Image (cartoon, rainbow, N blue to C red; front, side, top):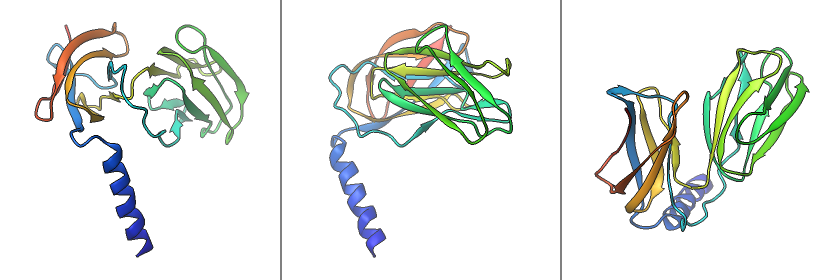
Length: 191
């Protein structure tokens, strides 16, 4: 019974935290006619209310790879970099966005980085040159990463006009305008 009361209370809190007209904006990212996975899509929202901090954000290292390959976060987010692999790693980003070098660390260790300004950071391992990932920090509470079919969902968007931006590995950021409405999916398309 306590669990049920806690769940109902949490649902009521989430409903009251969302505006009564907010909705989950769905969309698709495409290059030409092909759906694009790992595209980061975000909306400009200079007057958006602050959101509750998300659960722990993780860019994992396992099987000599980063998971996920593309991670989107809000500016100010702390990202955990656990080494869940069977070998040492040395995670770094020197080129764009947040610059850091976590040094060499063993299996089971975790390092943390705060992404304190907007931008795309290329993430690598100094020991394993085939490991690569991206962290895109955006100054908006409205963002998502597209799935394997190019679909994305931006949670709790207030209806109205927005400027959107989209980035994907290997392409420039594109910008457009759209009116967000519950029955109108956002289509993001690279030429």
